[in-house]
Length: 461
Image 1 (cartoon, one colour):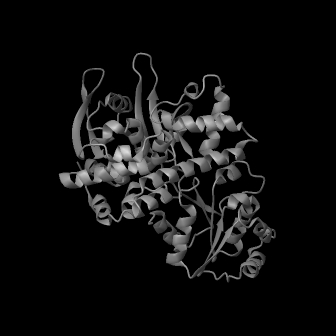
Image 2 (cartoon, rainbow, N blue to C red):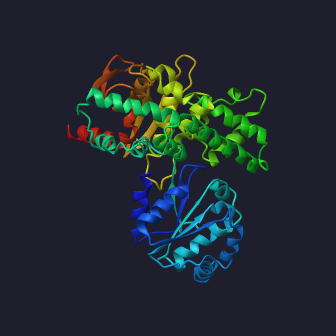
Image 3 (tube, one colour):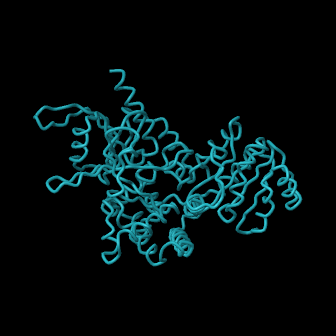
């Protein structure tokens, strides 16, 4: 199945400033499959070493000298390492952190050899390492679940993807195309973007098997909790993990997880889940300027789960119930749509950038306000609202635009796309103009391109 990260890898291969590449991401998002696809398209052969299956292979890297290491690898695995023709793939490298430390020397002493590493729970190695980090001598590729367009590719709907990529604000969207894309969106919301589940849905359309695979993935994450026992109780991590899917779309409060547990301990458990990339914190930012993280708050935040399909499975929402519903939106809650948009926004940045996302929360007794997501696009700050239906109030969005003096906003909903020039009222009664780009949920993968086109239109006026 095609992944957009494959194009990034092809560019990396030919880049003169290339360094050993580490693919980071949660379990089961397709890291190893992506690298093997890359090998088939760009190399003559591959030497793949899985350090969980062959733990003794780590000793071959003890010298940290690539010119000593490579002959040992060739002798052990009977594969020639030819710079430019062979891909050295070090899989499950978190099981051999000492090998991670040796990567720096491949950049310095054998730069023509293409080296890619991948691992699950790698963030724990990076967060608590007892070795010299190869700072500046390696680079990262951050991989998340499959995006909606990748899902369409997997289903053989390449022409729909081409249509999405060619759409521009103001173009007419035929009702038939909109209905078809909403149908596929409905499927994605419950199938999600975990590659093995998508592959099963695309090849067999066996819905019970898809649910069984989702349960297997969730069980894999639960099994990983035993790796956290030195830092926090297994039960506490399990409790936070089970509650997160039900708390997406709202301000995260530890009392909603367990009133009897201390916030500090639950916060530690949440941190570990974020390190495992099973969850992502979406902190509040004041949104006064860039970078957004400079004004981020550790006290006020929301949480996004790894994948919308896994969220639905965790909440016992059955695939068949959604796919057979006459009107899907009463079945799918706003939180599910917010998860769908959130996971796409997280990984809409360049592959080398750490996934980050922010929201805006104004907790006041008289007037609580919350904007679902805040992102940076170029040198501008963009507020984003998510609605599951075709309508919905935008009071918080108007408030943000007034307070921050912004003139552009983005909304995702179930309606046709539109670009509206409108106004918001200031406290003194005056009105200030702003533009609202409204996109159907299935266009979330196109948001940067479409917002850029609107910005250019603003600049030309």
